Image 1 (cartoon, rainbow, N blue to C red):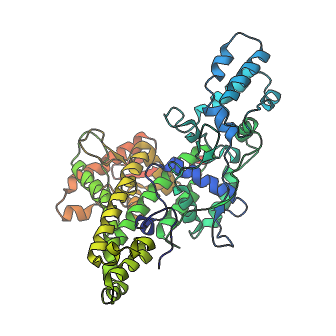
Image 2 (image 1 turned 90 degrees about the vertical axis):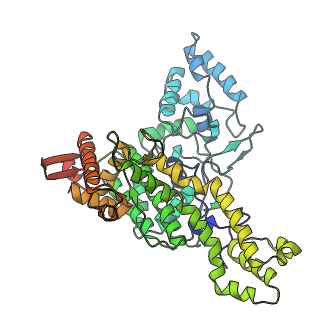
Image 3 (image 1 turned 180 degrees about the vertical axis):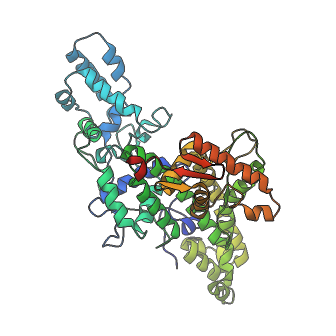
Length: 507
């Protein structure tokens, strides 16, 4: 019998990937949720808990988020030609009208820490300018300041008119909790945890002190909660992600610049975890392959890259079908079919494995007398329908978000990594410098990226593309990296990819 997962009527996606990965929780939101779990466990970061269950108590920071994202009148008050005291009084009355009544009505403490109202307004402007999706049309309680330190972290909330706050699991859908579990289950998780806390949770940093000045004392949720469900105790992708993050954090760059690469690395590795689990469930032994077009006008690799994208897009629905249909190959299913009441017995097997149908529904004659094959078909239809709502959109949403896929200059989506992602790959893979061919081989080994003729030799052998097209694609990447200052040509046949934040660059 599989572990029961609360809050779902039936569990198919969850047993393949965990509870839960979610398409609307893009990598930057996943990272913020992860930091919330990490901050709550900063005493033993990314360590296996003694109780066997990871728990955390997220911050809510009503005052900070209200000042930054539910405070549209601070600029208009600042621009008025009235005495400073009157500005404070007018602003205070207007802010109080929209307060959530979660200890955010009396903001008089701000007057004691800012000399003039203009200083206060400039602080708000500075932190807003760094926020994620500050200009989006999301509700104000679902906007986030840049994670400058522990006081800048808080969870996504829905706040009603009476000030009641709840996490509706739309933008913090537990993907960040799974990211925490993945890293805690990696071989070097504890080492990474200590490094993350050391680099990211400095309460004395200038920007964190500014955030704390606005927020005051932290505001946390009423109680601790359990994190989500991850079905694997170990997985090679967990270790790969951990190694990438350790490499990024040890580069010679400011931590705030490193965050961009940590987020992109998390997004890429989570996407690969999603595809790898899908292929494993479908018993597809071939490794994940991502054929990338390096855009330079139209190339012969474009169609092949589009085909690669579509094949990976279809992988997850195949996994769902395989998970449900696979129950018919088990001994317990055969025993149920041979029992005195096969309908009820088959329903029981499905309930033990997928939480469907419920015990109450099984007692109903429609289920207890339904043939096993029909029950499997019904569950399969339900699972596919639910999968298409969110899990089935993960590949397209995340690949676009991290800059791996694009429709630019094309009729359909294909893999075409942008400059930001290419830079993250260099930062993660290259310590100081690496021969270009070795870089391509390593990108293939770590992430399944196929760019040049050596990595795509099997495609040439299968006559899916000619060698010249892949060689041209390789040349396009070489030119791109050179234009970004990430590659140096020593001769026509010898080029080195250089990490500008490596040890040699720092000397």
